[in-house]
Length: 214
Length: 307
Image (cartoon, rainbow over all chains, first blue to last red; front, top):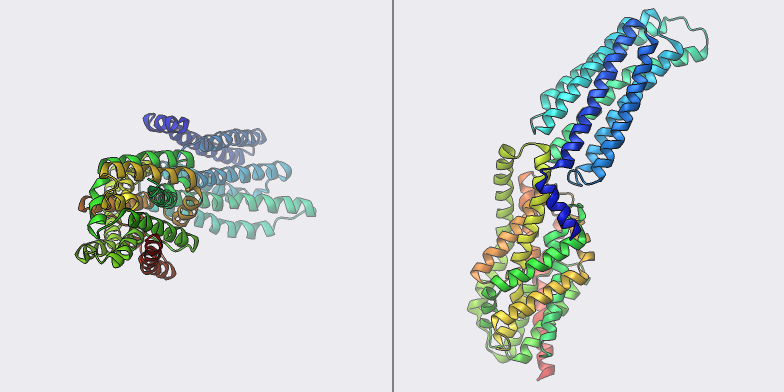
């Protein structure tokens, strides 16, 4: 009986819980876009305070992620869709995680001048990819075709792969003081260039959710 | 009145088995809880039995001149056959079991009217084929309409939730309307019950099976169909309900299990998906032959013992 009333409430509320979840996911991706933008500015200005702001944004993103997951498990959307929606949110959170790692490595070791330009280009493309991820998410909510948007994300990712090749070639020429400095620099470049892969995975997952409801 | 017990047993086993065809997917995908599903199924089965159940009662009695003892033997043989088939995991149809049993009884009395049997067998053949066509057509048409009208993810999700519950209720109604004749039709034929009383007794016994012993089969069948997406699950149950309802109007009780398998195959054809294996089809074929034969032979034995 109680469940029947809950179901009627769900229908009559026109999907209040679902709307709450989509608004939260939107906020999550927007936070990611902001974090990427702040990171680009921080890299350009070599500003450590701005880098700390990225870490703060990651914490905010984590809080939103928890909110989304709990709303989903309170009964938003079909049970069939819930694991995929949660997986998408987790993938976005992993992007946040990689961004935070990149910032941590930067704060630890800094960035050699020789690598700065290419790193900024990668960070800028990451930001564009996040914006495109938001556009793709909105399109998925409206039930539109996602193929072109996902293709755009893949093109961005390809560009980053090309830059990564140059970046690594330049990195080999950077004089390294000791093993740990080299390790941290390597990790910095690795996490910076992995962000795009994770965004691509997230966009692919949007396509899975989209196709799952067709 | 003790002769009604075998019919109640048949109704109970039918309810325990066939409710899986109604809400199996809804329950195993978590859209509706098991308790809600069985309550909804029981309510709509009784409604269907009461409102349209008598439509299919006539044909069972027309097959042969049935005496009260025959009615008891037929229902008991059908119930045991169904239980045995379920134990062997062979999809079986209660209508095939009861018709096989009635033919078995009529062999002894020599009163079989085979002209009615042709109509019934034709309907058995048409059931899975009709469900296949219905599943395919509904998937195509409803899919097209939904893609044009209910596009947003939120609305789609709500539509599927409401749709799976609505189609489950409709399918339960059709199950009650069509299959109650399998349970108590023989008692109407023997003059023990009026169609209305038979509908009440049959409806309540099916509901009893749904409420007390349907969980295991529901989980097994539901999980077997889970690889279907929610839309396909909704279409399969809707196609099954429509086919059962159509045959109710013709006045022939048919199999809900065969209807849902046909619908699932039809949906598979839309996306060129392998939904049912050759082994599964062979099992269904085996059930087709074994169920009426076994029920008929068993009835022969019971009737001989009672007389």
